[in-house]
Image (tube, rainbow, N blue to C red; front, side, top):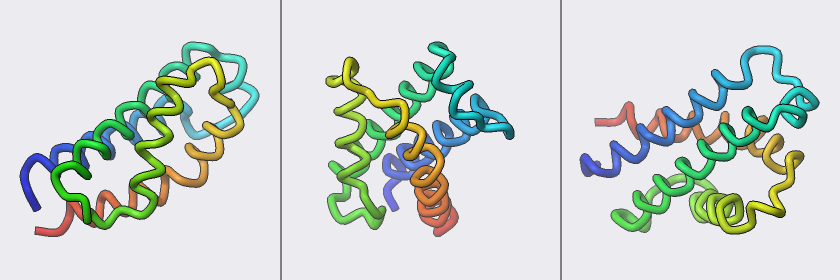
Amino acid sequence: MRREIRKYLFDIKTSIDSINEYLGKKRNFFEYQNNKLLRRGVEREIEIIGEAMNRALKLDPDLDIKNARQIVDTRNWVIHGYDKVDDVVIWVIVSKHLPALKTEVEKHLNKD
C-alpha cells in the first residue's frame, strides 16, 4: 500500500478515536444533542474522515473500504449542507458505522 494511502487511513482512524474520546463511555444522545461544542467537534472529525477517504480514493479508486463513496458524500453533506445536518443521522453514523469503518481501516493498516 502506498505511503500516502496509509497516512490517510491513519488520519481516519485518529478521527474515529477522537470522536470516541469526545463522547466518552457514557454516550448519551441527549447530552450530545444539547452540547453545541461536542456536536461541532464530532462533525469536524466526520469532515476529516470524509476528506481523507476522498484523497485515498483518488490514489486508489479500488480501495477496499465498504461504503467509501458514502463516507465522502457524508463529508460533503456536513460541509455544504451545514444547515441541514441532522443530529440523529450523525448519531447513527457514529454509533453504527464508525466502529465497522475503524475495523476495516485497522485491517488495512495492519497489512504489510
